[in-house]
Image (cartoon, rainbow, N blue to C red; front, side, top):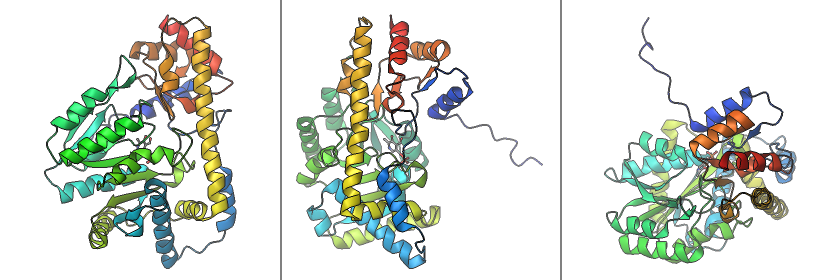
Length: 399
Ligand code: PLP
C-alpha cells in the first residue's frame, strides 16, 4: 500500500550530523565540540551531587495524581524565584502565569503557540544568529519570523548599534526573542548598560520581550548575575515571558524539566493566561513526566541542596572559563597571528570561533575535530587533556 510513499527524509539537524560523524570516527584523538550539554574535564557527562542527594531523598515517593500537581506547582514557584528574584513583586502579587514545561524546548513551543492564539497576526523577531531550533519552533506554531542584527562577525562581539536600529524600526508592539545570558551560538551577551538601553527602547516601542533562559549560571557562574537582563526589564515595568531549562545547569537533559512563565497585569489575568497554557499542553501531551520535576523542586526548596547546586553551577562555569583561557593562551603560544581575544570575551558554553566552513571541514577530515559548520565550539567539549591537540589543529588550519 502507498500510505507513506510520498514521504521524504526530513533534513538532518546540524548537531545530529556532527554527532554521527564523530561516532563513526575511530581515531583515539577525536574531539566532539558539537555537544550542547556540559562535560567534565575528562569529557564525561556529569551527574551533580545535589541531584544524587535528591535522588536518595525522593526514592520511593508516591507518584499519585494529587502529588504530581503539588510537585508541579512547587517547581513553578521555585523556578520563577530564580529568574525574577526571591523577593520580586510579581511573585508576591501572583502576577505571573507559570506552568511546568518539557524543558526549554517545550517552554518555547508553548509560548509560540500561545503567541499565535492570543496575537494571531504577530511575528517573532529573533537574533541573527540564534539557536537553530528556534526557527523550527515558531515556524511549527505558524508565527512568521523576522531577524534582528546581533552578532558582528568582524569584532566577534555584539553589533549593538544595528541591534538598536532594528528594535527601533520594528513595528510598535512586536514580539522579540532574547537570550538573557550565554547566547547560543555566539557566546556574546549585551553588557549591563546595553541591556538598560535595550529595555528602555522596548518600553518606548511597546515591544514584548520573550527570554529564553537555557543556561542560567553558565555565563558568570552566578545565578542572580545571569538573570540581570531580566531583572532590568522587571525594574522598567515590562510584562515579559521566560522559558527556563534545567537541562544544562542541573545536568538533567534527559528528564526534560522546564518552566514557562508569562507576566500579567494582575492575578486575575494570570489565572486566565495560565488556564490557556494548560489547555494547549493538555491537547499536545497532557502533562510532563514527574520524576525530574520532583528532583528539581526538591533541590530548589531545600536550602542545603540549593546551596550545593549553586556551588556546582559555579564550578561548571569556572571550568569553562578556565579552559577558554587555556585555549586562547595555547593558540598565542603557537605563534598564531590571528586575534583570539573573543575566546575569553565570549561567555557560557559556546564560542563562535570565526572558523570558516572550509576550516571546520579540514578540522574534521585531517584532525578528527568535530563542530557545526558555523564554527561554533562547545567549550564543554574542551578538556585539559585535549586542549593542546585542539590548539595545534586550529592553528594548522588557520595559518
Ligand atoms: N534554548 C536555547 C538557546 C538552547 O541552546 C537550548 C538547548 O540547546 C534550548 C533552549 C533547549 O534546551 P532543552 O529543551 O534541552 O532544555
